[in-house]
Image (cartoon, rainbow, N blue to C red; front, side):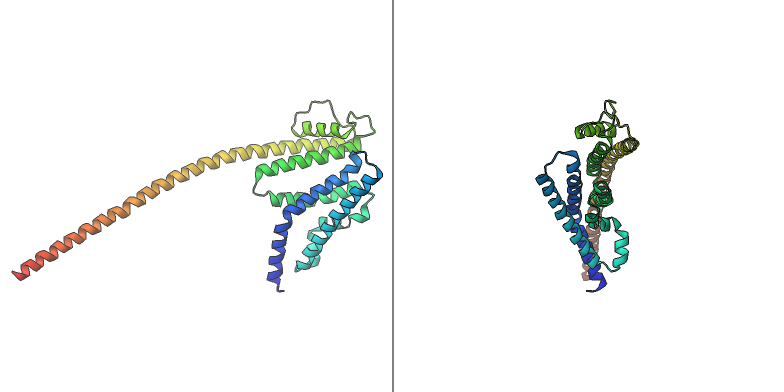
Length: 255
């Protein structure tokens, strides 16, 4: 297989697997968080672990295919180091928090790739993912302390009010890490609100420009539609004059 064919196959494979792998990445984040935010018995924990292994197998297979199709395999592994770390996650099983952090760069990259041309969908999915992960992290670090955040529902409520910059004040983190997440959520909320405002404004501007272009196109079409008709009548008039002149000249000649 020549380099061009391999590059073409790699691009096609990445394009076809973007959405499924994004969904699997989100599923993995949920699976990794469930044991810490829900009370599970031994059988349920075993089932969750089996699902995590299944998702890991898909990640490993995907990475192996991409490496085989890549022309410079070492460079490809260096550029896609989050994928390599995800495949190495079985060696980090006790560090569930670190494993979640490893998958975030991949999830973010795939989210941007899938929703690059869909700003509103990007804002919605980013908000959902940010709220879900931030509430889980804050719950993990705030539980057991003097924080009013006692369970995951409290953390989820806090994350929703924080990212929307409402901030009722009934729930708040007390640890340094929790406050850091709060600052991140505030900045994210402001940024997403700015993107939403710009997207709505751009929609109306584009709609106005499209109407103007349509009007110009119709005017140009009418203008160009009349010009050929005028040229046709002028050519026909010239032809009639030419025929009359020819007949008159022929009549004089016969006389």
